[in-house]
Length: 68
Ligand SMILES: [Cu+2]
Image (cartoon, rainbow, N blue to C red; front, side):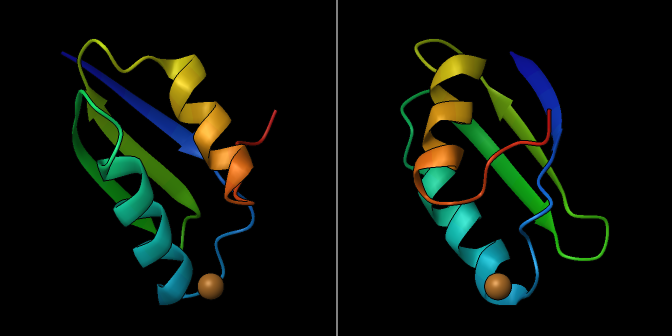
């Protein structure tokens, strides 16, 4: 199990938080997703077959790219 924390500047409201949590939770292997609209951070706990590349690609696809 791995925990990552990403900065996602596009988070602006509870809708963003909900969208991110719902979409990322659908990735196979993801155990938990916690997005915060104040800090604009997303904490994700996952295991294989999920990996950072897949999660980052999904976030970019739904218009919440991870800050470089
Ligand atoms: Cu929003």
